[in-house]
Image 1 (cartoon, rainbow, N blue to C red):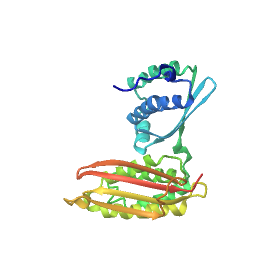
Image 2 (spheres, rainbow, N blue to C red; image 1 turned 45 degrees about the vertical axis):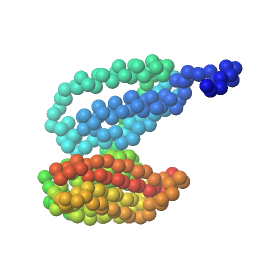
Image 3 (tube, helix red, strand yellow; image 1 turned 90 degrees about the vertical axis):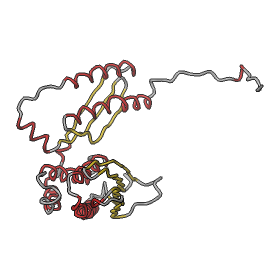
Image 4 (cartoon, helix red, strand yellow; image 1 turned 120 degrees about the vertical axis):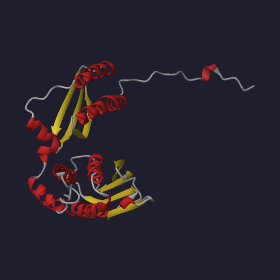
Length: 265
């Protein structure tokens, strides 16, 4: 038999306070933001960055979105687009969140980052990808345009590292196994371009990409590591972002890991 507890010394359980801003932010991140990402992705639109905040009795959400080239062509082709009934389901979620968080005003602002692309830098970046149109971007010219825009936006830190890695994976998933080495040569050139042309405010000091899987169609899996600049092992006081994803191809599944080291902002 164990010793009995003293009733006077026991602490009373307290209910969580939903008015706490941190709890509200986590709640919005789990519900609204993820649901918005899903709905925008159905329409071929990617959310690059999200900002959530509170002011008095108001919740504001700022979304930065990126349109793919193929999606813009569709909008120009069809002048009238039918509304998707899935979008109307978000109204119920927004009302539930406002009721739970005891707020009356919700402001959602959408910013299109495509309009903030430097045209002069686009021309310099396109020359780098133009050399691989016949092998890496065969019959997929829109993908070449998208990766060019994404590279320029990543250079100025206007999109997340995750979206940049996803577009690198899209290019890899559409190429033949014989072109894997050409793809890695392009990544090396791309990393050098990013480090040299990065501005001082968002200076890129190091980039590293690791691809693991059955490269070149071999039966045994292997790894390919591409590094440019320096990636410190100690990350407490360093501005290092890490992302990983799986790329599904006709030759199997490949793992992508990506590190970005920028100067402290």
